[in-house]
Length: 182
Image (tube, rainbow, N blue to C red; front, side, top):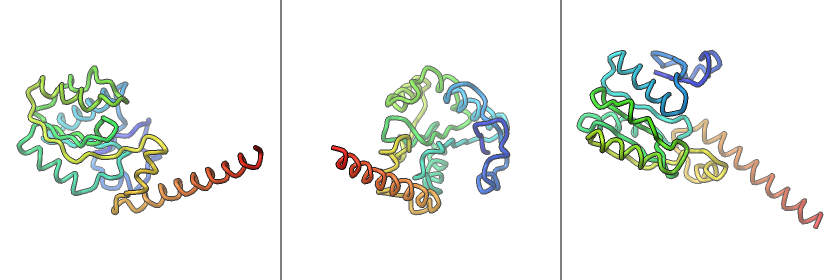
């Protein structure tokens, strides 16, 4: 299933949508409401285990998805935390889903993972944490990713490499111009 941000999925690249069984726009307000709605839709369709990933985490690969799916056999929830205090992957079983897990979370802060784990404890959920990931929110994150790219994300690596190279070139030009005018 693919939940996208926008009215229709028409503008999405074909290689994103080709294998998707269902393509739907996200529903809800903040990121928590949108994630809760995606889980609810999947569970309502009879899917017993659902893994939701962020689109700004190029280190997610098939191996990590398989690990998350396996972890849900004997854990109610699975997460891959991100270095900035959030998470880039969340997996839940249908019997462990609670809308409240997505409420009152300080989204876009370094407290997302800790607050979510606290919610899981309140619901009595057994949680498995997988590897910590880098999500790309800033230019510094792009540069960090470029230093240790995912070997399977060939297209992403090409784009990120080009962006980082252009940024370094611009920074070099800016330093030269500043030197000339000082």
